[in-house]
Length: 169
Image (cartoon, rainbow, N blue to C red):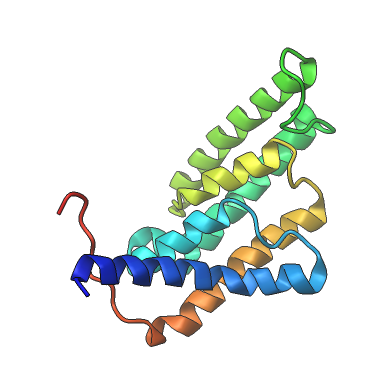
């Protein structure tokens, strides 16, 4: 098998396998341990496990900042609204403000604390746009990220090292 295909399969399988751990928690609890921004985090961990954006401090810290910023802006500006709100409504405008401000706060927070993890910008939108907004859901998001990191740490010695796949090469 050629090197690019082998690396591609390794990254894909690893990314999916990492999501199995929070997926088990979904199955056992019925709580939203799987959410869209967890996929990009799994990909970053699988593709570039030694990159600065894949450190546990940055992954967990970035998502925590995203959750806090999203919760603050949602409950301050758009409480009760959900991203599926009809266009042209006051609720839709409140969600736009909530999402935009949450992204500003998340970016500022991640840069200021050196916890830059781009997938956390999606987490802040998930929260600030009304999709996961309760305190329990906020805790679940953080626990899901932590479970992803534990799975990554426990399985990393078992995985083959992935040669960096360069675009166009």
